[in-house]
Amino acid sequence: MMSYRMYDYLVPNVNFFGPNAISVVGERCKLLGGKKVLLVTDKGLRSIPDGAVDQTLKYLREAGIEVAIYDGVEPNPKDTNVLDGLAIFRKEQCDTIVTVGGGSPHDCGKGIGIAATHEGDLYSYAGIETLTNPLPPIIAVNTTAGTASEVTRHCVLTNTKTKVKFVIVSWRNLPSVSINDPLLMVGKPAPLTAATGMDALTHAVEAYISKDANPVTDASAIQAIRLIARNLRQAVALGTNLKARENMACASLLAGMAFNNANLGYVHAMAHQLGGLYDMPHGVANAVLLPHVARYNLIANPEKFADIAEFMGENVQGLSVMDAAERAISAIARLSADIGIPQHLRDLGVKEEDFPYMADMALKDGNAFSNPRKGNAKEIVEIFRQAF
Ligand SMILES: [Fe+2]
Image (tube, rainbow, N blue to C red; front, side, top):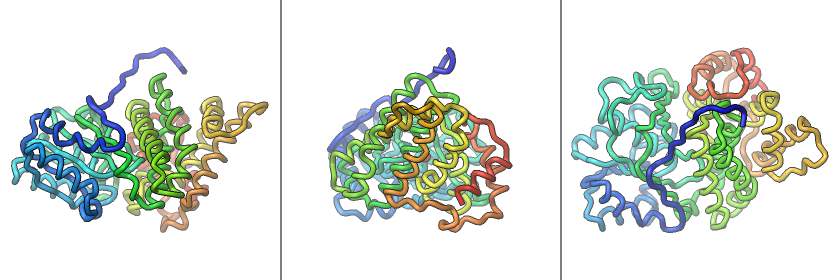
């Protein structure tokens, strides 16, 4: 522990985990007083027969709850998605929001909850604890092991006019109930499993080395890193490997609980620019940047990087702290390469001339402030260049 200071620790009130956890969604909605739900999801998930959406609908209807559906959520969810969902929420006079999917439907659902209860533009609430009114109850049914938005106070949306991601961070965004059912993750394709898994690893690593880390977040982050190192390759290799899926779901949940409280760092601050400007999948953006930002951050906390090497299964016996810390970077890079993540921004349509703008915006991103090393725009451009 770096210093003695007060810290807070937030998680949703009720969290369900394990095979068939989805079966509680109807009864839990009823307990929250829900009579008419807006189910927020995307078209891909809705089209899967007997998938997460169909099952959620079944359990809600069995509990006597009416449901309206908004299925227009896009990846890197847009302010326009929120407004479209809000129109249905109001027209159908819904009282509860159930989000089904990975991070995008959860963030969009939080956005709808904010827009339904707060006046004015969503962008005006970007920042920390700007929300003044309670949101409608949110039940988040999670279907990917990655973003962990089902347990976080973060709502990340893209401003379609400026193409910049903005983050609304508030305890009011926390879903009332989170549901993590690994059986819903079995059918996910390998590239999505790889990208979301690297997002979870980035959460755990950034939370562990964060300036805002505390003993509780450290415990969650450590176990998340261990589980990811031991299970992500296997989940990518064989999606039906239930043990790997369950361990990755648990790792994602733990990493989410860690960063929800310890915050993140420059990987996310920079990845948000790639997501906003190029619509790059969030997990891929994180995965490409993580080893390079880790190298930059190494001198801020070599002991913790040496720990990470050990958690990832590296043999660090007899090594100096700095040598052990280096092993963390190579272990992260090897994991990323093993699961087929692209290794260079140049292969992902990124333009070098955008680096100075993205660096400026990254330093203004809310995640930059908990990074353990304080950087400037020139240094951030250099990290982008190394990842290029
Ligand atoms: Fe993330």
